[in-house]
Image (cartoon, rainbow, N blue to C red; front, side, top):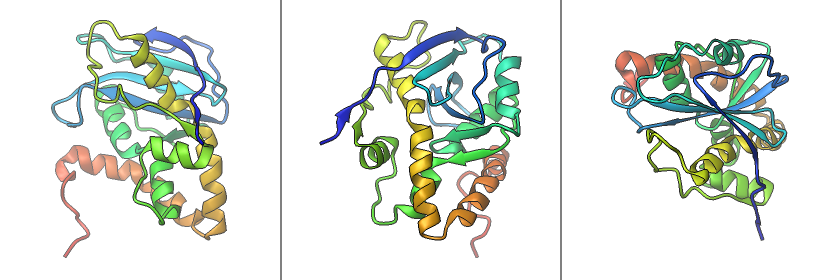
Length: 211
């Protein structure tokens, strides 16, 4: 039976990370937005965790600035791997709103699709349940992230989205190596930056490789 998710330690920041934070060699990253349209919807929050149970949430209220030099430095550092779940969407929103071209990307959803071919369930909730035996709630997934004030449940949900990505990455890396797909996964991760560029340029719904 899956066990309940652990309670993360949450630090909420406005507009940027504080100076001096060290996320180590890999940082889990996620975003919350007002919707799923690259054109219509705006970035509301960026979540980060070093995989130590501590989550830093950076809020961007409507009309606020998006300079965020400390956050940008973390995301653009080629020596730090950025772990996403469905990196394609997050990379687009980060590039559009923060002007960030994330370096060194790992996508747990892409890895899951490459190696968990026995299932069609690649959402974060399903991956965490199978690989870690932990049950997380996605109840706040469709809530209003553009609200002036966020509830404790929203903050907890946002933090949980990055809380387990380091552990998932380790589990998926073992499976990828076992099936001889590590090199293929790495090539897919490298392409995600180009995929995000194509989305922003207007090719989100077109397969340019099709006949």
